[in-house]
Length: 41
Image 1 (cartoon, rainbow, N blue to C red):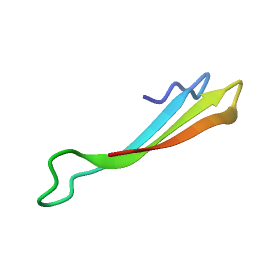
Image 2 (image 1 turned 135 degrees about the horizontal axis):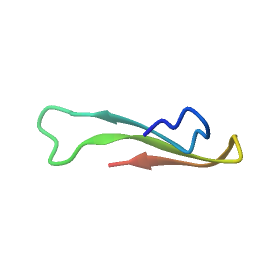
Image 3 (image 1 turned 90 degrees about the horizontal axis):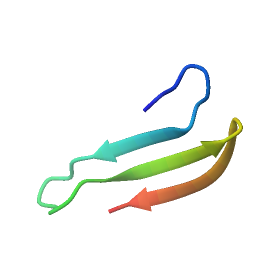
């Protein structure tokens, strides 16, 4: 989800063998600055 004019969200996901769900990170940007960073599992 990359918007060349206004970067808003970046997701990086991993498929871990034996895990029920994907695992990764999500970064949310507002006005070009990092607003929130979460780990997803």
